[in-house]
Amino acid sequence: MRKLQAFFDNLKKTKSNMMITTHLNLPRITMIGDIHIYIENHRGILRFTSQEIILKITNGQLIIKGSELVIKMLLSSEILIEGKIDSLKMDESSTKNGVEK
Image (tube, one colour):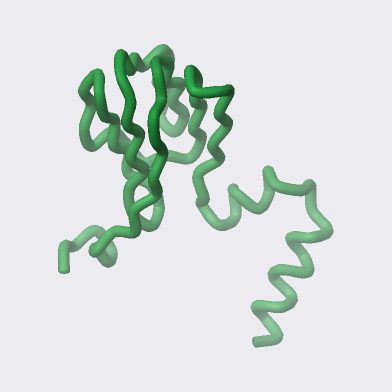
């Protein structure tokens, strides 16, 4: 318990959210209105259509639904998506260590 408390105390002392997302491998999602979404720390594209994009993230999937969805930029761990975004959902996976339960 002390190690966990020390870990979070150390995170508080570091450079805000950037360090937290890096240490915990969490996705950082920046959305502008319903037309633009920028995601950092994704693990790859699982599905891509003009109505739905599913990205793999650390503990599951990120599901983006909408219309006329287009990938404007794709890097190894960053993606920029544009279109009419209707919903964004984080779905915890039923996998452990990459193996389906």
